[in-house]
Image 1 (cartoon, rainbow over the protein chains, first blue to last red):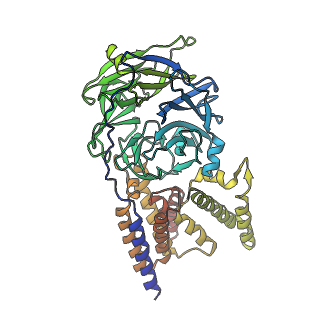
Image 2 (image 1 turned 45 degrees about the vertical axis):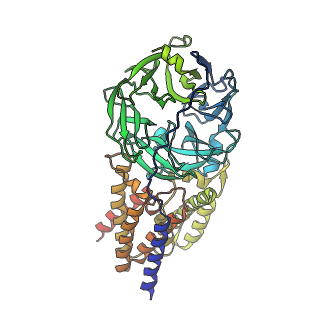
Image 3 (image 1 turned 90 degrees about the vertical axis):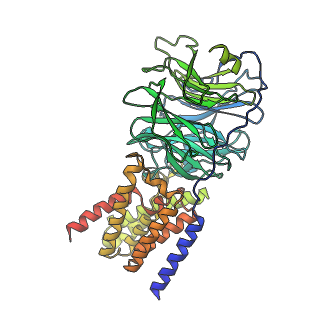
Length: 378
Length: 182
């Protein structure tokens, strides 16, 4: 009788689990329909500072366009990278695109540890995404033990364009104490209204992954973009419903080149990383597909340091690239070489490109330009 | 649901501390030590309970670990079944963790997200456990699978319900001790 009861319990539990099991990913990339630009037909290029010096050190900007066309940026700031006083800050660029608001804190260490019910030692990279139900989702890194290799990802959701945020939740993305997953690049969206987040590991290995999230923000699958010790911070650009290009920061052994991977099945499997012609001094890159169909990347065009920030354009989905060097130091920075880092790009509904990046770890610089400016500088 | 998941995670730490108190206390007072250790886990320090600090280090414990901790209070399980559980956990851990952390292009952790294939493997194990009358092992598998189906933990991955790194370390140690004493 006891044996029969155990067997019946086994059948019931597995039948229940089978019914509840998440189905495999079948969706394809959402490709935005081309918009006709409503912006200026003259070249536009403006540079400003999104941060206003509330914290001495700032890093790792991310941004999203709000419902009313304003741009909301996020970054982390504190006395230094990894300090316990680091918080996630946010600022909004006004509708006339002339003035950034003074930054306000939107996530702190103490709030995060209260929300997730565990000790949090420090905060790191934020990434903002608008899910296809209209909410803003703020993903950000936290560490409980050790350095950045001990990172995990938290998410807060806002229903009011970033004015207020719900409690943080942790995403569980690794079986080993859920450590070693960091976020840096924009999410990619799918036709079933879900999204996937490019992430990377920095523990035993350095490699990129794509994490699929359900509409309620739970992890439902993952795929490896690369493996080994030398690639991280992937950025993924969908080219058609199943085809996407992934670009990765190169770390370690030469050649110091941006690495490229490709998927033909909407991200479920990826080709082996191959070096592109573009230099990479072990630094983050940003990439997007413009509404006029070109690929645009922002990167440090150097094999040794981050002393220039450049743009490159491809009109053939990444087969070849044309370099457009755009950014020189806005002003001398002490005696040290300037360091431009962690670029983030988005195209707003009016067709302008917004580029944010870290300027010598002291400022988040915002550059906006349009297609006409880009063409004039090619 | 997030609050429930957090409470369950913290409960796991409380259970762990209680079990440690139970093991370290004198034989006649082990129950008192267990209760005392459990009570310590609730003490707030700097706005966070002690269990929250421990959880920051340990992460969430698998349901298998939680059941083994509970079994430890009532005298444990038979040697043969314990050896089988340790062998299963150790071999699963050696398969899972190195590759999930980046050794090679294959990521076995992925099998636990849309876990139809993994469920079939666990079902096969469950039937073997039933056949061998290893009912504690069978209970571990059923509780893990049911908890995953109910989404009781923060994790959506079945692997995290079946095992955790601490259980893996204890299992490998256990396996060596049990083999040495056989």
